[in-house]
Length: 163
Image 1 (cartoon, rainbow, N blue to C red):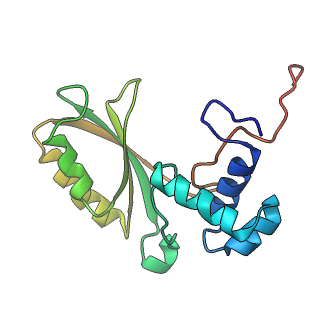
Image 2: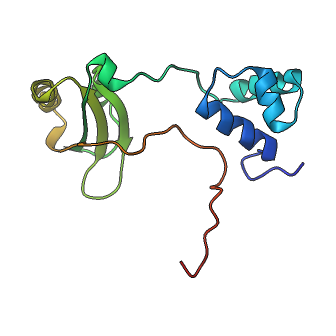
């Protein structure tokens, strides 16, 4: 079976896609879906974990059920460019879900989730206490229409040049 540039074949992409939808599926169910025996699926999943393709299996929590309905993205401008030990103290803050170094008119984007605007204000105060933080710009999410894990392979949607 042909493998793509990432070393995945069609079955690998299908298995990974199924696992991102529900990682609790049995190897037998996964095998039926992709045409493999349960032991063959188990071996592939072991390989994905061993090679770092699967980095962990976690429960996705409902933010509303955990009291963390407030989602925001904070653009952070710093004195330097790139990651520093002092700046990476941000990852210790429990409200922080993601930190990205980006191009454009800001240095990094931080995804945060918390209980309230008061919690956001306290978080911003902690960010400004870091010596490298110059300024921030916050964007509060009003609604989330799509939030999903990384998807393997290329899209199943065919793009036509006339669209």
